[in-house]
Image 1 (cartoon, one colour):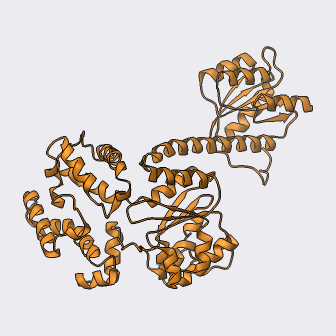
Image 2 (cartoon, helix red, strand yellow):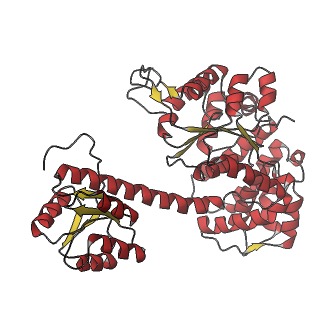
Image 3 (tube, one colour):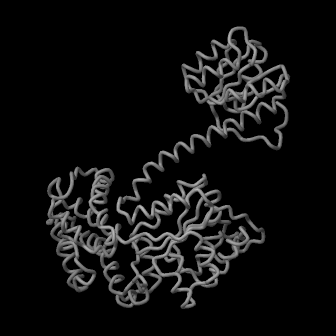
Length: 486
């Protein structure tokens, strides 16, 4: 083949059908396509082509328009009647507008005029294969979307209002601001918006409160080699990773004012620069931001820039706390029980009526996430296939209010006693490590809850460095619950 043209599309390997009554044309096309890694099947008539299409799946079919029995257009029409989704490229020796129009009307991807240049064939087949790849990706995403749709569970009027806003905002490019308490499912709502949008790029999430502000800039924009001590190679940031898709900025109220200025510029100019870099890069992303704090109050307090708030607050969506949509609890119980069974291989059939009443009465300060964790713990410890109140003994019983927390020392002792009883079979020499590993997460969670989410205060209570606490929070995936401004 001749030199590769500059606009050639790199084609993923595929299965290609060539149909032409001229053996020399078949020979040339078969070898040209095989050279690019494709599997090629060549036939000499329209009937053979149709039989081949009905027998196996082809990505692309190069079909001559004039053959002794069935024409290429007839093969195309019958293939479409049989719901065969192969992409057709019609070949014709007659460079007429009528043939081009007729081929397009019958659903051809494109057409080639004989004599054709093999570079042109390469480019056209490459583009067709790329379209096949994108189509498959879209089908996969649709399948994933059907599963993800189930993740936002709720049938109450409060959730119906959320769905209405999602439906209106998703097809647009508008920036969305999601507000709601910790654990209400803000990220799931953001994912639902993304997967209902026209964007085909990835969904990338970043929790702004989980990363120190001095590192957050490089996490967002990436950095060049040598930009700072330890930057031994170039690294792309979240804006580049989310190209063509959606960037979800969770807990954006925790972003420093200096970094807010840079984010505002990106939203205005649609471009950014890596840390230590000079070249401006295009920011082809849709921004969805979220916060469990009242951003308007943060603006008034001078902790959040008013101009950035206006940029983010194009479409605002508030996810209601679970206590305001108790009617969804039975649906959530069913969903999470099914999820636990799939993830852990358990065979829980449901909850007893007593448990259902307890869960319905609980105020759920941790919202949907707290409900999920409660059911997960109960399923792991369950003695039978139906969850009963005794299976929730780890938490004593579902808490009626957030003030019913056991005193810190008592809660830790209670947890240690349970673990000693349950882990009596731990090998000699491993008991200390086993207990520390099991107690560390609930201990940090209790202290963070006691400190109202204040990491400085929590670190002081624990007697460890704040950076050590941050590292532990990140490693254990602990969600920080902060009081919600009212």
